[in-house]
Image: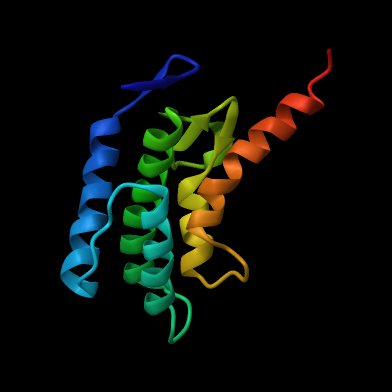
Length: 141
């Protein structure tokens, strides 16, 4: 269980969603997700295929948003030794805490799946160390 302000997050249910994502991507697109930062480039490609005819909506968006967000968050948590947390900004979805900063993988997944320009799962994950460093340099002494 992860925590934030005394609230617990059932990580096992998030891992189950992430595993569902990997299984559905494998069965639908015949590609494997390896639980690495590099696999997020692969998942970006899958998202591009999903949205090639336009942004996802309705039940398709609901399904993929949950699965992709959980996979993205779990990869980041594993890679950077972070944790799943509840955060007031997440609006009913979970956030991640990594290197002293919060990230919102479900929001990022949603933006990618509705076709927001220049959004990328891999960029989200790879930018966190720089965001954390910037945050540390801006803290008052």
